Length: 401
Image 1 (cartoon, rainbow, N blue to C red):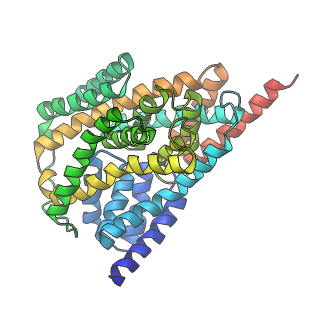
Image 2 (spheres, rainbow, N blue to C red):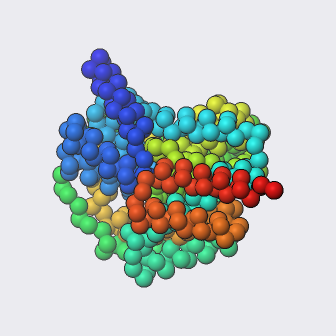
Image 3 (cartoon, rainbow, N blue to C red):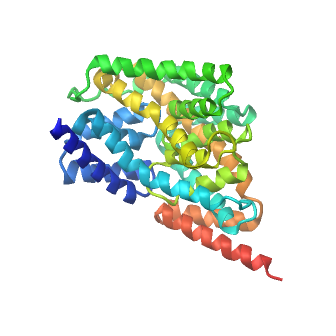
């Protein structure tokens, strides 16, 4: 219908502006969304927006992108969901693909400014760990669960161990934290999606999660392997973009698809662009040594890592009212969120810290960047750019005879 098409175009234009200007990570993105969608445009009220945010925090995947997808769905149905995702995602994805092409032929281990990106990634992830720990693991039981998750992942690295840790944390949360659930608001979230379509989306989500690994084993087609690994990463991440780091590292660096230095340098660059951190997948797809690489590889990796977000939002929206009032489900989520803090702490140690901090000067720069982010609340992009410039100057000065 023309009205639906025009509404989807409007969603795309608004989301594109947000994608060009939304710096600061998932929490900041949700603030930008509230200002634009609730206060300025009045596409939905405060209570409905709070419901959508709660839903997307409950689901695995990039919470801010999923919130945007949900808002687009309410505004213009499924075309609106796609328009919201494209507008918010394309700017950072294109910027990171350009960055990937720009570092071709360079040795990331020898470029001073790229080393600065790796160092500032330490500060960015440390800030994420600190903030998430205060929110998701503030007491002894949850802090202990986070610490155990860190020990397990550091001692037994690999994507399978991370999946087991998340699942075990959900079971522990279901057993230990059921009383932590709030009863929630009785106000229903009205969405233009039927339960039949929602069930089909959930079935497709689960079917792909099972079928893609089987397809990878049955074929030698690198594209299938890329889709499987990025789809699985997008399916298993709770807690936002930073938490995808250890999963992606295990999937692309451990098998030798991307070098350690290029991985961390790209993650540092992802902090300097607006929009969702999941667009880091576009950078990885562009620099990978397997598959098509370049723009095609970036598009495949980007679509694969975001596909679970679409399927889960569409599948969960009609059932959210019942789920959010279930204490057992909320208790399981509490346990998973605590384990997420542990996974991110493990990622802070390796690969972020081990690949970036090699000298006292590196530690000093990381500390200054952390203070700038956590204490002075400077924009992440500004801290990233400044750190890259400082590292370039230091590298140039030390190279002088």
